[in-house]
Image (cartoon, one colour):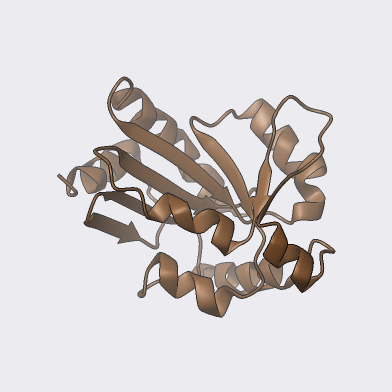
Length: 177
């Protein structure tokens, strides 16, 4: 039931538009959302996000799809903080892809991040064509969140689930090695 509600919420989020025409979206894949905070949040469509899945280096990328309105997503964020501490100083990059409504960045996302800073980058994904981009992230992904991709070079693992504690997340990430 939670998975179905998450999927429906994701579809609703992705159906929302940030008031750009399709030609504007094609010309500008990333925009910086004006904020009253010191936290800059880029808003991108999938074309703006895609390069993070194509890095060919010795860095391990931990990419978490989440939203402030997703209770299981928020519940697992502390485990990602612990994971960041575990790998601090090592070649790990953390990217949190928010599926929050772009129009609510200033009202919801930024206040959340001010109270709960996340390690790494936070990006808002605003792309209504979920049928195209979801299988590009992972062919097995239904679109439910939370979802996490970890990759290094050609090695990749994917989880469409909520991690219930730090050892579960850390052990799963270790399977990439």
